[in-house]
Image (cartoon, rainbow, N blue to C red; front, side):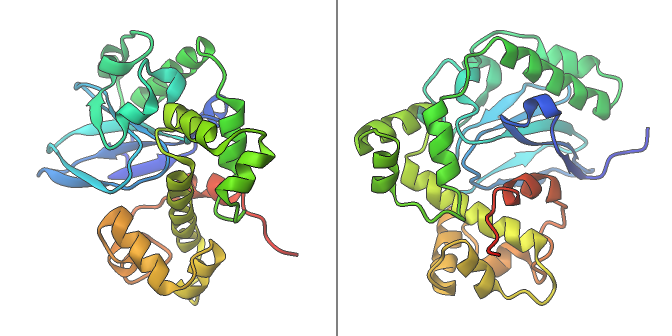
Length: 271
């Protein structure tokens, strides 16, 4: 098999599209590397082949850890609220945590063994998706109210929380409780995270002459200073430090089109 790139991201199996935002294969090189996890509003399942699958819970700030050398990892990044049926604990207990997946999974399985037995990284990624498909057939449906609210909290909507709760015929406190249980984050925190994800998505899709200020305004930031404050809060970096010198590719050099394409598909473009 042709060796995968250091980080190869793609769309998930169609049967997982409502729950999984993207899947990937990652190889580390001859030396350990620092991995930076950015808040996305959802959780991530990371499965080192030959190691223990682990769950990165919903993040409120960037988290870093060290990946060993010569390791291959397959993974899945979930949409907000999609992790809740997979685990036996409320989602807010996983916020800013990295835990062994088997310690919190709603149903036991043999995921680690299945991935270790895969002959290639591509086969391991297929095995991961097959495992998730099997799990989802045994799980309850996603919380329809939270799913509807999340769609309305996307950066292109400009929704306020109080009108959103009235629209859904629920109190703000009840809405927050539902979000904490299923998403892990309150609706306002999720909205801020999705807005930043919207900015990153636009930056990935931008042309060379796009201005950072224009991209920031498109997702609802008041000005560039507002964007910079949120970027520092969520990632610990300035937008320029995060994206590098070019807005069409993140500073790490990876192509994230598969992750941001479906995100941008929810955007309302004025006629």
